[in-house]
Length: 115
Image (cartoon, rainbow, N blue to C red):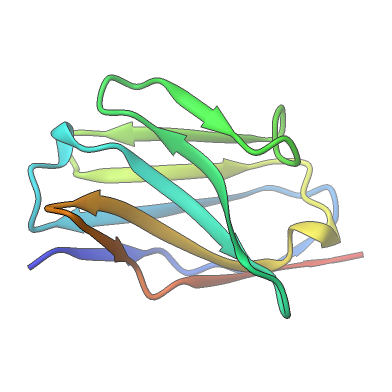
């Protein structure tokens, strides 16, 4: 069984920073690309950042230069460092992996950025 457990989000002031983490179990973590998505109220769930098994990264245009995705294959953990946060970044953030032909999701963690 694949489990993805995100760290707690929180309330941050605009311009601030927050780091999210996601611990994966049930997969050979180092072999899989890992993703972070987010869903704002009333919006669809969108890809924020992705990291391949070899460490290559991609970002949504809206977060380029502000967010950094990384991984620790020893700790089976993927991180999302979020800097220069703005109220537009307010959303529930989800960890995701596509494994064994299935999308797996964490429960999500709420990040609220106040102006």
